Amino acid sequence: MTDEAIYQDRIQQLEEELDSLTAALAQAWDQLVPFLQEAPQQAKSSQDIAPVIEALMTGLDATFGAVYLLPRQGQPEEWFILPDDQVAHSALQPFFADLGEQTDIYWAYDIPTRDGDHTLWMFMPMNVSGEVIGALGVGFADQAKELSSLDRRMLTRMSERAANQLIAARLEESRAREAKMMHELEIAGNIQRSIQPGNVPNVANLDTAAEWQPASNVGGDAWGWVTQPCGQLACFIVDVAGKGLPAALAAVSLHTALRLLLRLDLAPDETLEAANAEFYDPYTNAGILATAVVFRVDPQTGAFQLANAGHVPVLIRQNRQWQSYMANMPPIGVLPEFRPNMDVGTLAFSDMMIVISDGLSEIETEAGMWGEAGVRNAIPGQFHDMRQVVDTVFAEADAYRGNAPPHDDQTMMALQFLGGRN
Image (cartoon, rainbow, N blue to C red; front, side, top):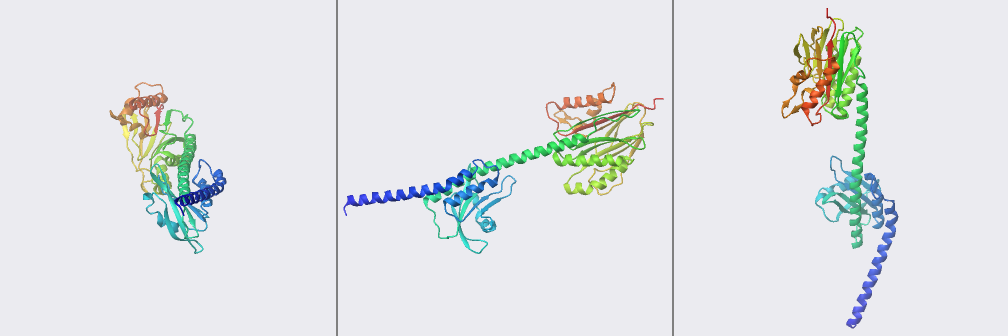
């Protein structure tokens, strides 16, 4: 045979191979198109990757398909295997120990099915911006299966598409979780705001005012008051350690409990003892503690009782002299049982009681901590009523803090005794 004849035969052979390859490509494309049309262009959840696996299984004539996602950003690893009742992911798990170092197709032999058969798997790492996020693979009942260059290209391309969809899906799921959390926080914030008193008590001989400003949508502070059956005005402030939804829920439950206990005519120390007995176990299990101040005043005589469970000092001005009443028991949730102590005294005409949360006293700037002294100094020497006192203290606190946002919830109750003038 002449060189010319050999050359012509080679050309014909190449043309036949090209025709065969084109036909195979067209057939594979015809099989993939319906699946790709069903597959979402932007996955909304990781489950949306199933059509991509099915398309790949069809294109490569595979019996099984799978996607494995590495754990990342606090999310656990994920598996999707089709059909989901044939191959356990634990049989494939050992092959992904060094997935982060893989860059090309790798093989897994003798993978057993639940029926006892053995299969051959091929996986392509899914890479996004230089980071391997998982692997896309197919399994064959024929363990002698080999991939053609077209098969390898198809597996590579589909892994790229799957990787992009999965990243979009995880972003969408993250946004959905964030939106759900924000909605839950909004609900918790509405509940917390609803339990704060809508007005201050209207009791003869007592002028009262209060202000509650959470640092965010929800917080750990709460305040309230009850006119007890004995005729005394009982008030409280609670401050649950922490922020966000757990602190808000704990504050709501403690607020409700204190109101119910005070309606039973309990004294402040008895109230806190009962609250601690009720909340110690759940607070311990949740890693929560709460400080609280409960006090009550007799509007006829000015006699007061005060119990402070780990809270910031209560300020009482008597005869124009300020006194600090420190905590006389641990915070709620610290000890399973304790015998509370209680401070007692009598307010004279114009004596004043100031109860705050640490969101006010612990304002800190370059000038230092505002502290108890800052609160006392902010109280005007001359004022019309307790509302003016509270507003002035908050205005001074804002001025001291400057442009910085509040670091914690800020709560204040102010009471002045106006009886006993004669």
